[in-house]
Image (cartoon, rainbow, N blue to C red; front, side):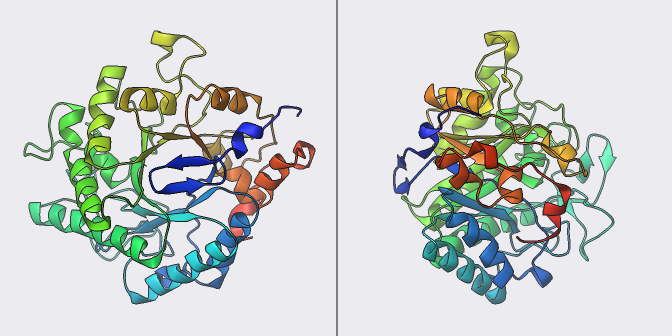
Length: 370
């Protein structure tokens, strides 16, 4: 590995957000907050990465105040005095280590994760977990209003606790994404619609409520994806025009940075338009909306991340493709997941040119908060 990586360590400034470099720790579910309360191990886990040259840390998904907003028993809450006290310890530890951080605010919708079931019925736009697959209940107008308010309340709590940004999870087949997806949003009221732009109304209203709650200057990120855990091949937007109609209203509503999740960051989003080496998802999102973007997807590792979470190992790989795309300003920031999960020193090693020291990913990295 001989590629120069200086581009990854240039400062990034946008509005009130000032980062020392372009490396973001991607949100990764750990399910290690007993009773939903983050403790000292969680704080130490994030602080280790903050002390080792990660520019911005995004927390694991942390759920809003709804009866069935999580799909595993130890996913952390972002509501209630005990959980918020725990998160205050986390952000204080990250700041003490010289880092910056935001929580990822989440509602898992009707998705499953193993055999665990919440006490309340799961909720989604149309009572579906996937196309033609019923699960849980369809949300009422009252449910929708309460959920929008819960997202806003959680975001305000993040600002009040001293976090640097907040990210809304609108990807991967969870609640917000279930409103986007025609396979899970069959509503015939104002929260559904034939077009993707119509089905984006719920997300737009969430963003507007969050912006009103946190004020005009606090940075809002939103994670979006084409693929779903229910269908890896799903495409919300089949061409740039449809993508612009989907994403531009989110930026207009108050999203500062789009976090564009794809399974392999080097793959072109619309190869039928711009060829094999065309823009990736984050590149197209930036071009169409004018907003800064974060790219993500199997950075620095040989294996695909979904297979890794199924128990497969991966080897460290060169970063030359990433460097070339960032030098071309295709996207602005790069989120790193499994590589940082396996090795807290990943960013520091890259910074000092010690690529030969980079570790691959092993499934045992999922078993603790090292």
